[in-house]
Image (cartoon, rainbow, N blue to C red; front, side, top):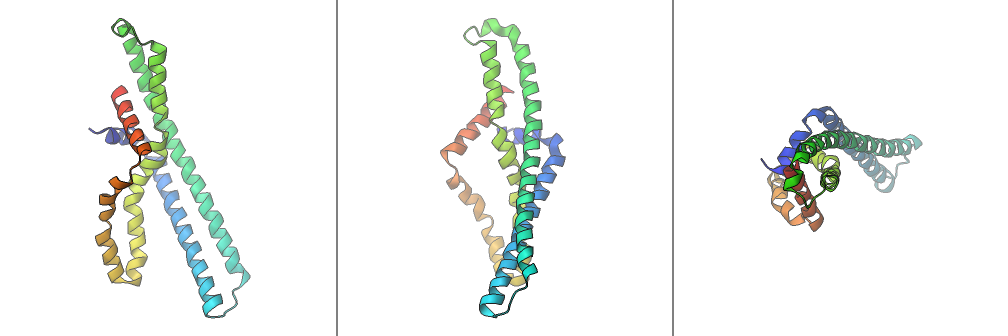
Length: 196
């Protein structure tokens, strides 16, 4: 089993928080789309059609901006809850492993138990980015394109077909985007997988 798959399995008991994170992410996306739709409608009405726009349309735009910010804030809070709960469980498993290995101290005379446990806790805390950013994105990368395809197919079937054909190319180009920082995070995940 790969380290990433193992870390995803550790978050199984946080499914409720994960679903909340996904819900708030989708709500933020929809709020942003409504904001952009209203903005495009205002530009169309004022610049091209020379129609005066009522004040409540501008108020609606402000409401959508505030809603998007609110949903993004709630998404971050729910993602942080996933991270906090999973890291607490991993810390508990790690400390149990440290207690078991304290009897084997003679086989590791060059490493103190405090240093050993601190190193493990530090690596577990480094998983914060994985559970806050990466784990919700795994699911969103499948859901959001489908939500985007619905209005695209309503506007143009050809554009929808092109998006369906181009979608798998994202998976081909993802390895080119990986930076040294992400490689370092991946090696950190592998170290935690080996430790726990």
